[in-house]
Amino acid sequence: MGKRKTEKIVFENIKILDAGAKGVSVAKAPDGKVIFIPNVVPGDVVDIQTLKKRKAYYEGTAIKFHELSPFRINPVCQHFGYCGGCKWQNMNYPQQLFYKNQEVHNNLKRIGKVELPEFETILGSEKTLFYRNKMEFSFSNSKWLTPEEIASGEEIGQKNALGFHVPRMWDKILDIEKCHLQQDPSNQIRNEIKKFANDNDLSFFNPREQEGLLRTLMIRTASTGEIMVLIQFFYEDKSKRELLLNFLSDKFPEITSLQYVVNNKGNDTIYDQKVILYKGRDYILEEMEGLYFSINAKSFYQTNSEQAYELYKITRDFAGLTGNELVYDLYTGTGTIAQFVSKKAKKVIGVEAVPEAIEDAKLNAKRNNITNCDFFVGDMKNVFNDAFIQSHGHPDVIITDPPRDGMHKDVVMQILKIAPKRVVYVSCNSATQARDLALMDEQYKVIKVRPVDMFPQTHHVENVVLLEHR
Ligand SMILES: C[S@@+](CC[C@H](N)C(=O)[O-])C[C@H]1O[C@@H](n2cnc3c(N)ncnc32)[C@H](O)[C@@H]1O
Image (cartoon, rainbow, N blue to C red):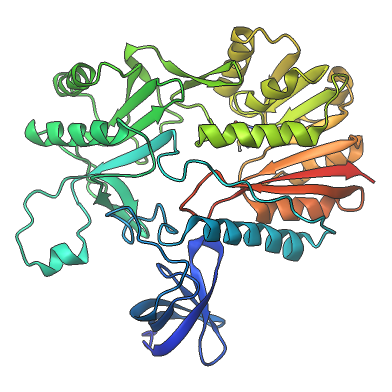
């Protein structure tokens, strides 16, 4: 079937009405259809050129601004508009919180269709910039060129870039000079690596041809001041690898953990790769309320450490522990929530799929002198069965913090079967959380809801729900 050419239409003087899912704003076309449009703020009045026409909606772009929204602010980042990272940097923070709260509310109402209490006020993040503790950058020898660079007509010399994938272009990398998401020395480390690699002819990866030495860079920073840097190479070249790693460790002696991976697979995920320690130790330490958590290259740790502390306090508060409860912490990761609530519980059982995370959880508990937490590894839908409950005891409270997909149906059914008094459901995706709440509605009433913003400048939002058995 031939590809139908999309007719491009211009709609004039359209008011932007709402900020929708995925950080894209929403307007209404004169024919009544919805238009999805990026890089505008509710309240702007614009001319819109459509880019795609679908049955129920258009996708478009603003080509002229007639009025600017009172919620608009100047984005601080020079890469705004091209980088997919901080789509809401042009909207003031209170308004970002308003739309995040609305998103959670709409999802719980429309998808969950459950009776809701009045929400507790969404908790904003004190830091709205430089709040991330983990960033991953990609090397590419096919830098994405901005329209300005193309329009300038100037010869673009070498096209090496170290930065982020441009949305919808898998092989193009936006070169980043300054990212506002991670504290220093993140920017210095990345820029020094790029300069050194260019000066010393270390080749940048070409994803189409599958060639080039340097693939990815991960930087983790912790509230303790510790820093982890991991470089992923495509193939082993000992002299070039050591040249770069030695340069880094000389230039940034503050790096606590310098590691690397040699990965010649098609994709660049490091989770199935051997991570090799080059200098320092193979983990960094994060601290929270006097508890220390070691984080290795593959560990999951909430990416906004300060706000994770707030999230965990709300979770512990919702759990309403008195010291006598048996608590299950499902999807425990490295056991952070389990350990965080352990002082207020009789015993906590943590379950998680990633074996390395459970090893860390056990080590962390030992380091923190916690003796009332036990951790188990396995896929939740298999591990969390009747035999498991029989051997570890019937939980009074379940805390659950699943990945974006939410809980497997079997896990929800098992919770319903064992029917603990309270369930605290922490979620980074209120749509799947709403789906799960609907499944639980007959037995569980939603008592409290509190969205928490872990990711300022983006549309993402975390949500904590307290459920009580009816
Ligand atoms: C959102 S994280 C929560 C981690 C932890 N609660 C925290 O705050 O650091 C979700 C966790 O679920 C784990 N996970 C994903 N799918 C799983 C499954 N099917 N069974 C068990 N754990 C799973 C992931 O490895 C990850 O550690």
